[in-house]
Image (cartoon, rainbow, N blue to C red; front, side, top):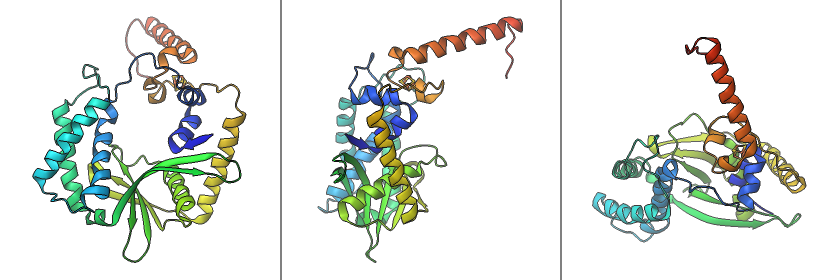
Length: 273
Ligand code: SF4
């Protein structure tokens, strides 16, 4: 089996969704990538920035960056389906472009450390014992002048307080398997806020996470049912399989029925529970 952090996390949040993804079950209707657009765009740029533009000493003026982004943007839009008529769409393509352009300039100004970074996009490690593979991408590996190494994960979220530290633990393990040593610092770089938040970790914490990962891997291998974990929240609402997920639809219908009964019982007035 091969496991990325995203697959590991998907299995923990809903085994059925994981199974659908692994089996490449056809999605009933095309999935709009509207919410992912900002992140895909800015990450693509910074990957090129640290791996190509800085090492090859391109003249990274504001104008150069705008033109470079324009080419990237056409590519990102061509590769990702967006339904611009969805009711939650509140920015058009031009507004997203301008926001990313402004944030790119702000981050470059705020973080001279980019000149010490590179990105490793496709890391695939075969585990000796199990023969399984773990894989992932490291957005920024910073090799500092004092010979320490930092791993920074670029985040496009608006919620700076909601961080998933296990993601960085996973990247630290991936780095150590590839380079034979642990990184010295781990952090999230929030593009929208030009902020880096470092997290606390120790070899013991990473060992604990490694055991959890191994256990999850074995659970996945033994799983015969891949039961869905229905949550009438973002997890299911944004799941591309919700239209073909029986359990989700049963729960949603019973919820609608319950709500209409409450409405009937209170004479049509809306009562906030
Ligand atoms: S709709 Fe919800 S329960 Fe069904 S597969 Fe998706 S995440 Fe799982």
